[in-house]
Image (tube, rainbow, N blue to C red):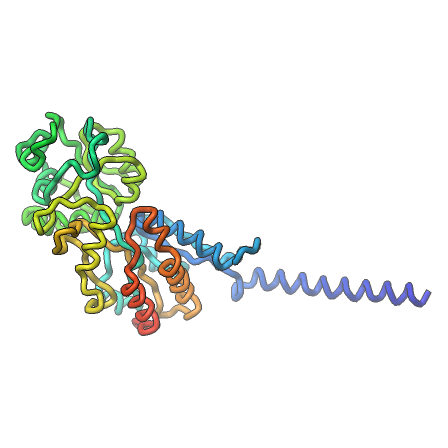
Length: 365
């Protein structure tokens, strides 16, 4: 009888202890001070595919083979375009913006932000012409001035003498060029119009480089995916889009004449040559443009995607999580970037970024 009383008391004691533990766990879970949150980012559709791969890899790495996944091992990334991402940095819940348009050092200092490159890539010029998809990639040739005149409306047919002159071996149709472009605030649009501004004084004077352009002609589509679908559905179309997504869609793309008078495709080799032309160690907050860089192998419409991270007024633990995400991407995610058609950061540049994180942790404070 005494043993039975002791056992009942013991069970009650353990049950009470478990109940207290459950209550404590619930309190911790719903406490705003300790509740786990995902790393929140927004911006570039150009780099969205590789960011998605890195997000999965980050979650798997932190879970370390276990079934439990904490929310703070996850990444919540919104595809809103470079302009949208930078605008959302004003929201206190956002941890980083991904942008193909680098922010000036003065603006970074004013806003208490860091900036560093995360991946590079090329903007491909695509066309929907009968027979072109059966040709080797880059068979269609275009120059900067010809591209500018197409988007200015001065060249309106694929049989125009200016296009035929640089494509003597192609049987180009007497077909109207259907100009397509992005509707949303796009870093890819900025890169493309920055290039047009570099090769055409008329374009630079009338329109310049921006994420949003009042186009002189053509049809707009929102986001890279819709733009690619529009090209696929439109005979005679011409458009610009991130190379990897163009490649996966099976669209033919042009080779573009560079400063050395060489026709180069937007493949990783051409982008890598443009990346290598930049003296990154001499830049401030990695502010640089890959457009129209010198070198025989350099693709002239190359770009970098940058992460812009608020640090002023944020806890160190919060912005260090963003560093942690991209540190893993640099160290283990190069293969993911390459497989998707991007150019990962060269090792020396990745090391410079890591040193920058240590050197500039409180920018703007």
